[in-house]
Length: 407
Figure (cartoon, rainbow, N blue to C red):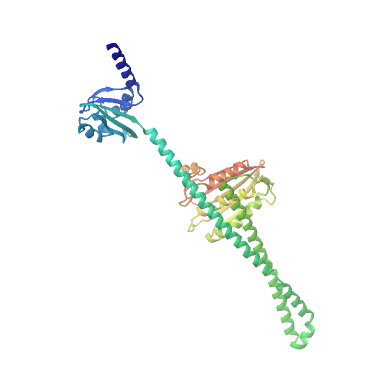
């Protein structure tokens, strides 16, 4: 019977020794009677960091959970749980390096002056929980942004449709018979010049007919200019609607490409037209250098417009409105079956560290930026078997964006 009890005690000691939690049996003064292998491993970094060599738990607790010392010293003699799942955080100092750690404690009194302290390092677990919470928060933020973006796109779409309808009404009004009637009246008076001269005199008749002819010609030119402007505005509206459709596809997760033979010169010209108002308002000088004829590339026109518009917009915003030099240069060249596009500006520029992060998703240098623009640009260009990079020699030295396409 005694041998069986010894065997049970040995098994129990073996279990306690290898249990995957720190276990320490101490008295009310913190003296350690038993410390299992896991406990030794968990306490070793603290002992080393603070040069604790005595066989007492209190000096260790004083560094990682000082509140527990008073609870142990003032505990009653009643057996049972003293505390359960109490978490304590502390900084572990290794010279200039400080590591944040988190321990969980449970204390059970087993007799009047003996208690078991159970502890574990939950730093990794808490890190994972924080990571999951952060991920969930980010997902909620992204979802909120998507909902906002959907509403914004819907509102912009409605505004664009309304704007387009008013332009069409203006176009219909200008396509009336007024110019044609004025021309016919001018021709009629010209044919009746002899009769008119006999009534009001030749000089007055000639002047009236000449004035009427000039008014007719001026009205015709004016109407042609209005029609040309309206046509251009409607074309821009069409491009905006195409871009809105692309953005809706991004939001809905549908990103299929619509690649067709595309003329990059035409895309650049359209993009320049769309940012012209911003360029003119800021007084920026723009130079565009492109060959008259270019080989076509197989690409998605709307998405390539999105990239070029983003680069132009970044260059415009990078130039201080009060700067002495305000210049953007767009250049397109062909070299060794490669089409190269440069967008260079005299803006604020950036340092090397910023340059390394420009295409990182979520990174932005703008107070109201999302950090998604350049990341999307890179994805679009790479989907066209191309490359994009942006360089700067430093702050105040502008930037150079380079896009290369294989012909």
